[in-house]
Image (cartoon, rainbow over all chains, first blue to last red; front, side, top):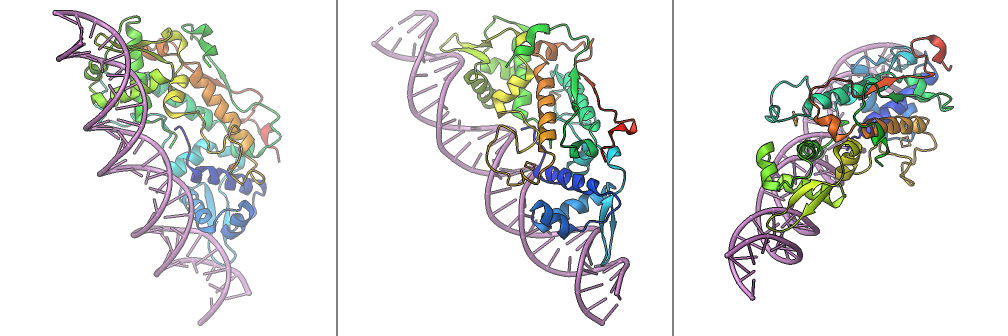
Length: 158
Length: 158
DNA sequence: GTAAAGGGTACTGATCCGGTCCAATTTTGG
DNA sequence: CCAAAATTGGACCGGATCAGTACCCTTTAC
Ligand code: FES
Ligand code: FES
């Protein structure tokens, strides 16, 4: 239903915590306690993020995780893609070549792709630093419509 | 994975078809053949859309479905909400009162809600008429960022 | 060498989605 | 009135995906 998975949600939560103290090394048990999440789950998520290059990991007794890049340079889109694969609201994405069969009769695919891209870009423009800023001073994302015309008055559909 | 369900995808496809001949009555078997989809599936989707008031249905021998409103006034957001419930990328939405337990330690919820709203609005501004326009003359949705300054270092709130 | 940490993989239970089917109701039309 | 055609409503099942857990291995500090 247009949902990110819980793992991704947790992942962002953990990453913002990491972003609070850049340079410091956080261990998985420590993060699990702080976030009140089960350790195996936290461990699993951190592993995935490290594998995708979003986290640097240090093994051994004094090991732990830290951000692999400044929080401002990590977008939520990257986190989502790291944990659950490419972002796309529809099944039939332009990148996916075969299948769907309906492609010929489908008059909406190109428009979906445009929407997909818009959402992806919206998520790509939000950094971890902004997610952690709970002050909410500025609007995160604004949507404008250019050259729409067709349904000018239709925005009130709700 | 940030996906709409196939039913919703089909639903939009069907609705754009309906939008092509406003006023005319389409039967479920007819639409199923045109879209090369199984009849039970089409029927199920149309039922849901009719129940939510997006389609008018006429029972009996000469029955069928037609749009309950002009195509310009039906947004994809409404279609999605009709078939799969409220739009929200995260589990813990502001509308959902209880649960999540993490709410106290969760520093990202308010920002997620803002993202949720942005996506919802983006989908609310696209009408069926625009989805059917395969010419793609104009951009459907554009994203702007105000007061963000991600590129600059100003956003470094810490 | 041992303890503490990450790394990888496999497994299970629950949930949800896709898809199908059947029985009931309503309308047309003879 | 009766039969045919269409919508309506609900139940049902198989499969995919997710959440969560467990086990075993490798690496490092002391
Ligand atoms: S449904 Fe797959 S291309 Fe439109
Ligand atoms: S994870 Fe539920 S409020 Fe943040």
